[in-house]
Length: 265
Length: 338
Image: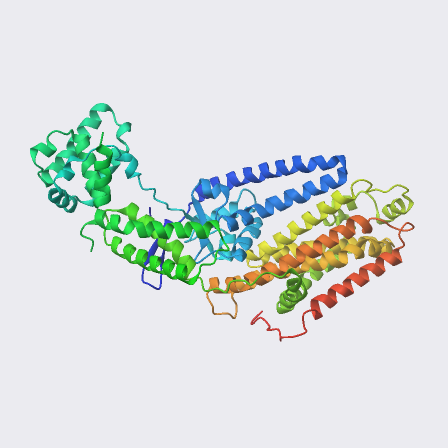
């Protein structure tokens, strides 16, 4: 990702943030979903209000006109306020509107960025807004500039569920706690991450590739710390890697206890 | 420098998770207020995570952890460092009675400019139609081309059936939503440094001026006043106020005689824009109702004198409201440089 696609903020504590700005394509896709939502909501409202036609057809039509207007203008405002900068489309595309200084989004900002949408829509299909979003430093359409907001990609890194990944396996390497501690200090974060990712994706590999991959990773770990033959030789490469990941990522007595507990017949 | 990153992550993760849970709660409950102990805990967690982020930033091998922490600290930063005054509970009546007219007066110069541009458009439209009657098709909307004003008046005054029977409410809703959309456009076009707003006001003025000249030159001035005034007395000023909001936005964008950064200038006028456009929406609901239920009915069913008098009363009330309402206590500060 180039610097143009990121925004750096600095807090009074001296911490720098790197915000990944949302690109025009993802914003357009989110917008398409939102247009679909507005159409669906309007249809539902129309169907519901159509029942009033039995009382007064004029009143039912008037309420439909008002409902469409309220939904088309108010959808973005309501969703972005109650979902803290997200509409349904932005949720799906993992985008979020935030204040350009990283502060909390105010109702006024939400309303103004949505009220100014007509100028971004000009002359058609968000040409003005899209051009500004593609060319300005902070990827802002005109409504964002006026409201001092930006749209970022919502980074939420899902950590693998280690309890599920490592459950039900007896970790023989923990039988030598001093070596396990040495191993924990010797394994680099990059190697640990590779091993973890290999375990997470193990079912995606071809059988031969899977055997070779875990053999390579296990060989790397075995070269770091030599465990007693009765502890390490009886287990396969994949199990060895699993045990190492267990030691590296789940240090502490609780993890060890749970590993032993799960091994009981 | 972190020596053992996995261990560092394992020891710090409970705090990150706790902070994330609190942030998720803020997201789920926008009005949530923390007691002092929870607020202190939240601040401590923020500081701890910020410190963790600073440490992780020296370690390039864990981009996911860094991104995760940045996301957490950013969200917490937004909650903690928000210094803008939390808006007090919104009181609609107070807002309408005081805030709206005061905001209007604070930006009186922008309103004056909107009036000048519209009047210029009116003059252009009127003069253009007088000097070149052949340009009528280009100056007037299509419904005004089907009949001459005299023909229309004759038809309307001899009508025996209600032309809007069974469709008044729908017509009213259409007028409201259409006019509010035009007003929103007038506001939004302020982002074109006000050029778009001025063009829209001028174009509205051209149509209005041409219609006035068309009816008056055909001897139908009374009908025109009786038709336009009941709703136009509110609708036309509403469009002018929307233009005023667009010009206020343009003024903040251009920043003439204001050395503050663009973001600060825009932040400052944001509440005023919302107030003005909110007021416009209310006025246009009234105008749409009057236009559908009253303006389309003419003499002999509804004498022109009554309609004209009603329009004049509305205009006087609106002028009083905008110029005098909410003046009862504090002084109103003018906007510098506008």
